[in-house]
Image (cartoon, rainbow, N blue to C red; front, side, top):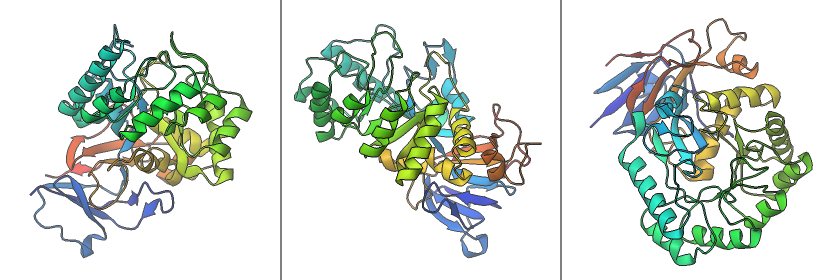
Length: 387
């Protein structure tokens, strides 16, 4: 039995919008799953195989990037960059979700080829986790001519995602709706490109097509890169039960508009975060933390709730066993603290002023993966990996 004990936690962020901060200074995980948390005196901390002294810093569920475009391993030909996933782990992200492996050189667009690539992508990230990061990949871009049996075949082989609707030849809502329905029938989750074109082959996807298609996630509702007009974004927030995905590589003003609208509608639980990288804007190792700070500062969202956009909300919308402090969920955490010399009396107050925290440690499946981040500003305090 592998037992992780994390002691001297300053505060526990739960990932739960309805109760974002939990009481307690200690957490225990057994064999990579969360077992218990609370006050150390009330928990059985004996027999730890791994022990961490948090030194008073904050523990949060690992962050989730809901929108990435991986290709193979920890390499992206889009930016000719190695180790971008490892770098993102240093920004507190422990789980990534593919919105399509669209940057693969020579990406097949025929039906046989796209199915083969989706299955292969799902397999190689299932078999190889860069730096321990969980990459949910194998997200085919739908093309004209696909039939229900194609979706059944991919689902049987383990494919659970669709790439962004609209990046392929399917450009009309009626056809897209039919294919999204087939995908949903076989347990595949879908997302749609929203806004103006981003790469050659993509095109404008307006609010009418988004609503007609009916995907599970409104991909980059704030544009990737170009956003829809304000009235269309507001219409989507008012009309849709899908997740409102806000991305780093989008329009920041539209991002704030989305959060403000969602708050007014009582729909903050539908807000999730992604980077939409690698892309023309590059790779953003701190993209999710930057979105949390930006939305907290400009969207007037308490920082502890803004964190939920980057973990718990995504976990619930995406049906994942990560991103929440919940018994039986994966023991994936980020330990962080207020950055040195950053304004604010506490880490959360500093974030709400628009500042990034410092990451001191990441843990995936109960295993310490990184210690002091090489990418975030240095924190006031750093947890210690005791054994």
